[in-house]
Structure formats: C-alpha cells, structure tokens
Image (cartoon, rainbow, N blue to C red; front, side):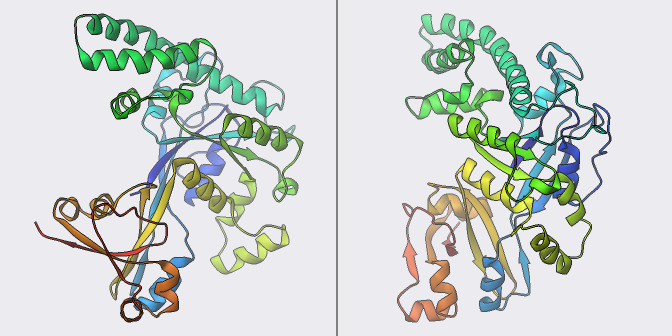
Length: 366
C-alpha cells in the first residue's frame, strides 16, 4: 500500500521540475510558461528505507521490494480557478482523488522565470490556492447541506448525520477556514466526512522550493512558510527542485558526495517522504524470506488483520495470528530462528496494533 500526493501550486513555482526529479522521469513537461502540465501526470517512487538492506542481509533475500509513494503532478491553479479561470475545475477534480496535498511554493528570486503574480510571495501564493480550494468546497456544500437537512427533517438518519458534520464544515468555510478543522463526533460522522472528498479536508505539506544556496538551511521566504505551517498544524520542508533534478541524473554512487558538498545529508525526496508519512500517520512493516524482503505501509493504529489485508484480502479474511519480531531484535538476533530462541518472536492476535519496523509472518486459513 502506498499513498498519493497531489502536487499543487501556482504556475512556474517548480511543480513539474520537482515531479520529474522525484520520479526520475521526464513525464511532465517542465517549461517556463503557465499550464505546461495539461493532464495530471502520475508517477510512483520507491520509498527509501535503510532498514530493508539490513533485513535482507539477515534473511538472505534475493531481492528487495520497497513500498511505493505516488505523486500526481496537477497543473498550476490561478486566481478564479474555482469559477473556471485558467484550466479551471478539471484540476480541482484531480485533487479530490489524492490522499494529501503537496503545496509547492516558490521561495527563490529569479528574474528569468516568470511569476504569474509578478512578485515572489509564498504566503500570498499559498492563500491564493487555498482560497480557490475553499471556494470550490463552499460551492459544493452550499448545495449539499440544505438537501441533507431537508431529508433529515423527514426522518432520514444518515442525512441527519451528514447535515450535522458537513454543516460544521460549511460554517468553517464561511469563516475562511479549511474543512480539515472539522471535528466529527463519531465514526459515522467521520465516514461521511471522508466520503465528501472536500478539497480543504486534505492534509497539507508545504514544499518550499529554494535556490541551491538555501537548500541546506532555507531562507527568509521559507521561514515564513514554516511559521504558517506551524500555526496551521501542517508540515513544511525545504527542497531545491533544481538540485533534485540534477541528482536524478546521477549514478547512485555520486549522489552522496554531491549532497555532502552542498551541506545536505539526504535528498529532498527523503524529506518529502518522511514529512508525508508523519502527515498521513503512516508506518512501515516488513515481510522477509529467501525470496524477498518487502515493505508495506499501513496507517498508525492499524491492527494485525488490517496489515495482513494489505498483502492479500484472504490473509485478512482468514487471519489466525501474526508471528512478529521487532526490527532491532530481528537484526541483532540474526533473524527468525535467533529471535525465536531468545523469546523475541511473538504470536500476536487480532487486536495487536502494528508497530513501525515490525517483521511479520501471517498465519491464516480460508
């Protein structure tokens, strides 16, 4: 299981350059003019995890299969997009299909690259896009909430629940606040709220696209974005799309030296993934054997049968138990047999909460 992040922002902030670098492809046309991305480009990247090499070494695995992170490169939004300006609502529809929004903000000066607003102001850029997303949600809920309220008056329990939770979201939007601040009171409200697919309900990661000189520590522009993210309970990272594009063309052996020369310890991709995991409350568990070491992703709070279901629905349906070893125990004790001998291989049942780094073997009967 992976997750999909929609890359959004105003035109010419570096979205397609970042997408190309992250996916190491040239699928998205990066050009110095608005709307060079006409259709949403989708790419998947392997999630790097140094633990996998250690697990594979112990297990004698023939290959390593990382979990995947999906990126959707969505064309630049402009003021008035919710009313069809620019390329309009088709792109708002693309955003509804993703799990999180990666909001790329221009945090660099460059007279050779046109800015759609003719100034560099990442906070204003963020507010422009956020406003369009809120207006789209507002228009949607102003139609739906009265319809649910009418059905609720006729005794429809589902409609009553929808009118309550979506009404709360509508009130927030009318106050100029995103729908993600809505607080469903129970599982039914949470389910209906999720099904509404509101644009401003998506968690947000701000990516500050800086020039090469600011890639290590950021700059004045990115500092303002980090302050905004902290105030909102969002996440922010500093990335130089230009550097990431250059790294994408290098051999793996050259990358570490190149990063070190720039004062960087990891790629922008690694920072984006880590922030994305935190944003979506995800964790990684592993399966390991002679054939392969493989990573899988579940949400924090997932129980063992749910993790089994990520691998195959039959595993969840016929779940019996999960033989589980923590990553430190697996590596330090030499794998499954050593962990079993040391009493560190646990037999976990249906209520076990999966922990990050667990190595799991599922027993099932269908």
